Length: 440
Image (cartoon, rainbow, N blue to C red; front, side):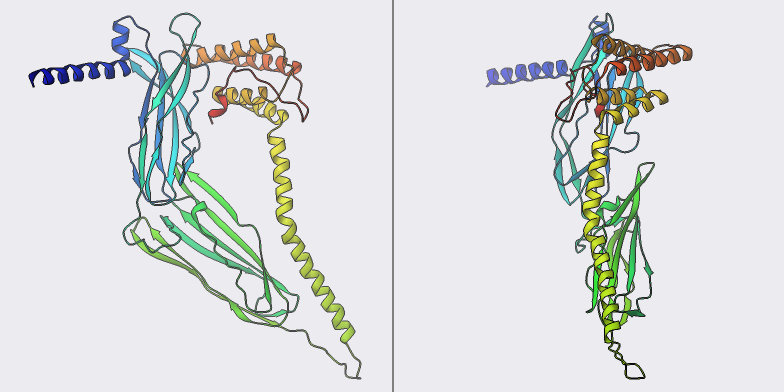
C-alpha cells in the first residue's frame, strides 16, 4: 500500500512539472536567458444570456517585439449561434512584462445564441508571427484557445412565446398610402408596417404582415427591408414590410390586425404590440346604359382591359423585382471581387495611414493580380516591415510620414508591373501576408 502511495505522489509531481512547462512564464524565461514567447489572454466573463442577446468574447495576443502581420483568428462558427464582429473589432494594445513593453492586438467577438440550450465553441488556436528580439528572423507560433461553453436561458414566463423575441424595447407602426375604403375595381393601396426594436438585432424579428386578404383583393408583398444599427456595442434596428393591395372586384372586408408578443428585458415581463385592422371597400364594375338607351358595355370593357393591364404591371413589378435584385447583387459582387476594387481599397487604406487595414487590402489586391515584378514586391514587403518596426518603436512622426510615403511609392511601382487576370485565369499568390484579410 505504501508503495502505491509513493508511486501516485511521483505521478502528481511529474504531471505538475509538465503543466508548468506548457505555461511558460516570460519573466522566468528572461531571468534564465531564454527567449520570451508570445502570450494569449482569453476573456469571457459572462457565459449565460437570453436567446438573441450577445455575449462578448475577447482574445488578446501579446508579443515581446512587434507583429509584421495581423494574427490569424478563429471564426468560431457553430450551429444555432450567431457570431459577429462589431465595429472596430480589432484594436492595438500593450502591457509591461518584466519591465519591458510588449505589443498586442485584441479581437472582440459578439456571440449570440439563437435558441435556448447549452453550446460549446470547440478548442482552436491563433496563428501569430512576430519579430525575434535579436536578428532579423520572424518567429511563428500557434497559441491555444481553450474550449468555451455558453448557455441560452429562456426567461421564466416566456416559454409560451413563439417566435421568441426579447428586447429592451419594441414598437410597431403602420402607414397606409391610398384610400382603402373608397376603391373601384383596378384601384390599389399600400400598407407599410415598421417594427423598431432596441437591444437586439432586427434579424430576430418574424414576418409581420400576412398575405391574408378579403375576397376580391389581391396582396403583392415586397421584399422586407432590415436595417441594423450599433451604438457602443448596443444593437437596435428596423424591419419594414410593404404590401401592395389591388382590388380585382367588389370588396367589403378588413385586413386583420397585427399582434406581436415579446419579452421586455428591462421589466422582465411579457408585453404585446398591436396594430389595428384596416377596413377595405371597393365597388364592383357595373354595365351602364345611357339616358338615350346607348350601351356602354364596350366602354366598360375597355376600362376592364386597362385595369387588367394595371394589375399585370404590378405583377410584373413583383415578379421582376427579385431577379433584378439578384442581377444587381451579382454585378456588385463581381465588382467587389475584382482587382480594381481591391486596388482602390488599398489606396484608401494608405491614405488613412491605417497599417492593419493597409496590410489586409494589399493581401486582397495581390491575390487578384498576376505577373508582378519580384523585386518590386520585395520592396513593398520591406516597406511594410519598416512601418511595423516604427509602430512599436520610438520612431518620430516625421519618420512615420516618410515611411508611409515610401510605401505608397513602392506600391505604385508594383502596380505598374501587375496584370489583371482574365476570367479563366487565377491569380497565384505565394504566402507573403496570408493573414491580413482576417483582421477587420
